[in-house]
Length: 481
Image (cartoon, rainbow, N blue to C red):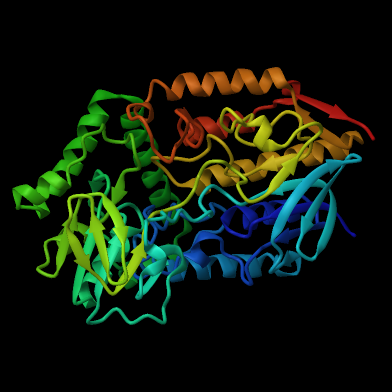
């Protein structure tokens, strides 16, 4: 059995960040378990054509590690992945990684966490989850899909061996990853059919390369970086968040922007009707693209909104009887976001997380659930954002977790567990606020679990950071061995 003070699972932005913060706090006895052969999380996995971030580069990076070498205003997947590798190497994190280690279960036993992988058991005082919310693939099962003779794969598991040129391609899904890959596929495919279940509100993303002068300025004048990042931050927290909260002026502005984007690029009234959502802006994730609408207007692209009834050897059939012949099927259908910890059984003092969260996931400050001592979650329940960079939340959580671990060590205590009443009071407050936001203006979305909004945070990032900067000792029970 391998013993460590801390075991972390996940090597994306969360896992890298908590590793750096622990080292800065003087804590070096930790390992990071990763199921893949490389670090990177979602930016390792998602290598589909056109993959890029929908948060500006200057904001989608650690505040303590600005990158003057960003090539685009919104960075491409390859450079984000390289940024993660560079940061991990700079802070000497590589010796802490244990690759190709899939966590099967974790159990609190004998005042320690026992984390089971396919290779053995790791014992740790603290168990930190940095797996995030978007890593379990969601692939719909259609009747006859196993009979399809062509290639079919999920967008997050892109098969680069398949040449799409001169092929009839069908993309099932029209959300975040789809709007990035569809314009690229449309350029090379003989014909592309996009199967859309629900249209999305979309803001224009006029991505461009940074000029040589801008990159020079970013590298030589650090204040410029901070100012630019600060302005982007204020725009997100000061305009987009109020719109989600229900501010009429902010909501009008966002609505004006998305409708102008649609009207600017789509002239065909029938196509425009298919692309116009019937739900409030922000109830589902607002998308960003400067190429998607133009791609749908190409002569070799069709938008199909009829539900799929089945798949045969070489075609996709709709419920209205249409038959669309296809050579390749791409499932751009996102991820399973609920339940959390879908593939890992986590058992606390008396029950599993699945049992504790039978009515929907919840955690105090998105990080701690009663009955699971020393389990710290990053990007956990009710910490997702619909308006700003998740990196901001991740950094705040990493600082908070380090603060709790250091407090335990300083006081000679071994475990910390959030009080049941504190967790319930916090969850009641968050749910009450969420139910008055635009997220609740729709019956179902990936933000929800049986009607309960389990994924999104109810406030601004400024509020969340302010809360985590404060002392919350009274909300926890601290224990000795």
